[in-house]
Amino acid sequence: MCLGAPHCQSEVSRFIAESMTDTEKKARLAAALRQNLRKRKAQAREQANEAESPATPSPEPRDQ
Image 1: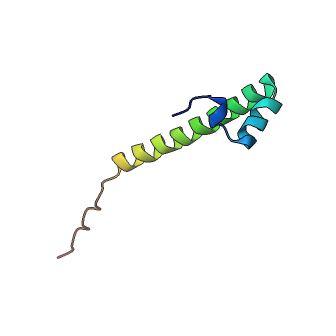
Image 2: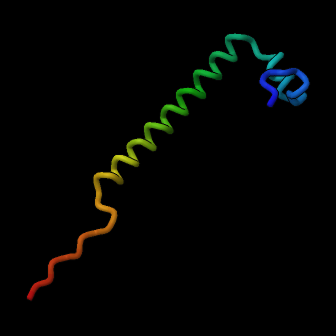
Image 3: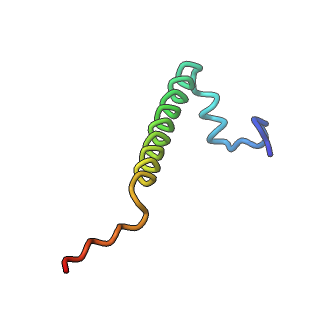
């Protein structure tokens, strides 16, 4: 696994890394982190809703 080694990066990713300023990199990272946080919160809410509701619906009472 190549972590940050120049010979492992594709030409496009190397160009992007070199052309972006530090401020642009930080802004892009912050946006990605916000998006990831929103996604994780939505997943947590979904799991909490699934845990609250029964997995199988209870049978309706029969009128006799």
